[in-house]
Length: 455
Image (cartoon, rainbow, N blue to C red; front, side):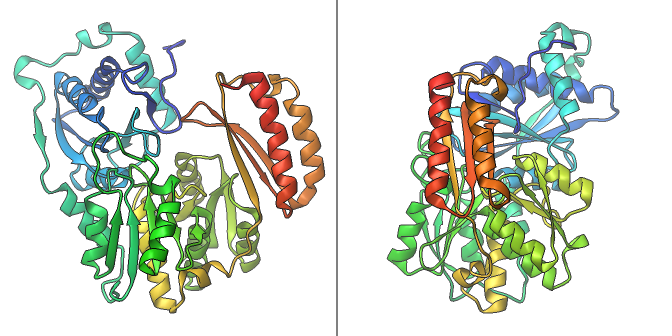
């Protein structure tokens, strides 16, 4: 339907809970729209629904279930479970789709709804536009296709979803290896991984000190998790841990910390794993996918080894699209979304952390030693809250300043300015060999943005 309002961003529908677009009415309509998409297909259909620990998840869960059941779809509740677990359960349970109620790394007052196909992949943008068009038509879009009263869907709970996912994650770690002797400081962000993450590492025989694993509906990502690795840095020192692991609210991204309490971000994790697979001749086409935010230092080191590094737009969905297009098996971004297509169809923080620890055990190297094989360029990232997102060309003075900075950086650096796909932010990233100059460049651009469109 031409002119239908855009609801989907880079990772589903997301916004402030109880305000448009994240209203109960929209969740109900989304459930009905997804249900309608199955009406022309034969047989009974089912959808699994997982969530994180936000207080608002309950109302969206009930609204989605009502919408789906009203269109004849059976629904299965998974309870709080990481996003990658929902992707896995969708396939394992042979469901027609999976739904995750989460705003990932955002504060508790935000929430979102995102989808997985029957194969566990995020849907194509064409499908999202179809859902938007159906919702724009209102109740009339569904009235002619409602099932008979005896064909309305049923709702049930899958009680063993946690256990299924734990066993799946453990299976990505070689049976002949153990984490025995390793001490882990773990931060689950008071989010969807709070139950499963500690069990995964403990069942693999690690000693685990767990932080931020008492969710109350309001404390998800609150000064903890992947956005606040300083907590794990302190814990590594306090417990003399071998490694720190910080997950985000829905468990699809991970930031690690080495034994010296130094942060190991998604770029470093991707580089460590790519190097390992490359030298084992287990990296398909000797190719990985990073994003335009990927650190030039890591990328150049990998390319010097013989690894082809392709780049995509920012966002794990775009990383995945490029991976599928180019038959790459590994990809990721600095934020900690790391995708191993041999294991799962989306970013999985637990799987990524286990791959790094596998390499530590097999090589006998500490995490700091694995990272030291790569050079890293200084990178300054600044987020500027904005009240609107006009085209960058129309922000007075911004393009001229960007052109001057790019000329000064030359071939030894780069500048990336973009709007966030999930928040009201403009992100500025400047990279190059001299940190002091980078900060000046970033501050110059941030000042212009604040004056012109700052919130």
